[in-house]
Figure 1 (cartoon, rainbow, N blue to C red):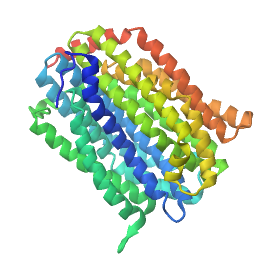
Figure 2 (cartoon, rainbow, N blue to C red):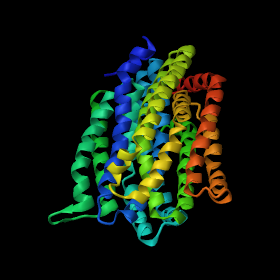
Figure 3 (spheres, rainbow, N blue to C red):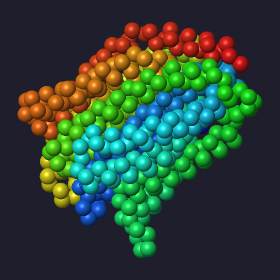
Figure 4 (cartoon, rainbow, N blue to C red):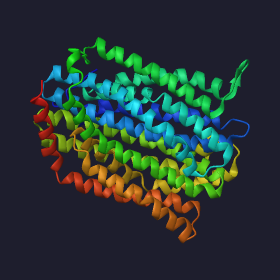
Length: 458
């Protein structure tokens, strides 16, 4: 299932890898879709959906930390594979799993005390607030399932294999489909736990995929924990932090900003916040396809830089931008012309919620193409190990959503619609700046510098 991305045409590799890469991201999104589907069928879904919205932002924070592992491991392993340093690639993969465990410990120590602060920030009603705290507690306790699978996925993708992670996550999703209705709604002697039950189901199923993935990597010889004394090579973890921290930092700011946007929506009621959450679940399908294209671009850039083909790496990244933009344009049409059946699927018969949801989907449809440029080039920078430029762009203009939303929402009196417009406007600016920064080609020199330091070790 592995592919050497340093040889052959970009189109042929993309056709082979894209279904798996997009499929994996769709499976990730479906975990959230399944949760929203069953939670929306509770007798009183308003507080539970609001809690799911708050919990989703917490989940995004964990996925941002996961991106620290994914970006660092993919960059180091893919460039090592491209340069023909197989032993170095295997040990880097093993250290990626150690790094994931360490990161889990940090997330627990820092995240549990901050849980109440995060919930208070969103200003949700008391019932939803307690549910949010419980939901976040389960996610933090099971965060190793997120960081671990991110490492599994990164190692496979670095070697041009996008199919194996899909099979692993598909198995986890099938298990989740069976557990979710049982733990959310209850059945027979099993009591339903609402949104908290959805969290337990997700954590258990993802952890099963992590264990199966690690076993598969070891059996294929892609991970080597020997010699054990080399697992704690300090320079490797410093490199992981240098590459991964900017990627995670931008993502964390993104999540915290959305918590702030949720607080602006809270005065308009649980329906506005629930519509925001459901709208993002629908948008996550588009997001999944774009991230799928981006992950192939990251592996392409990493392997080709490692093999000494920077212009091939550059051309592939821009071709990926074009493909992602075409997919984003199609998603925009779906959001506009099929918004009613989509909203009806998630929250049948809830007209107030649908009103906010229709507005959200039309507004974000305008930003899907710039979003494609942002996502694809963000990952392409990561494949080169050059994560600081995109971090600054993401951070500054994601944070700008808060004052912009306040001005549009309160200053101009646009209400909830002002929050939705703040997302579209800043996404458009980020896409334009990301394209400008990548076109300067400074990432090529930085990627070469990282590979030289890797070659000098061990």
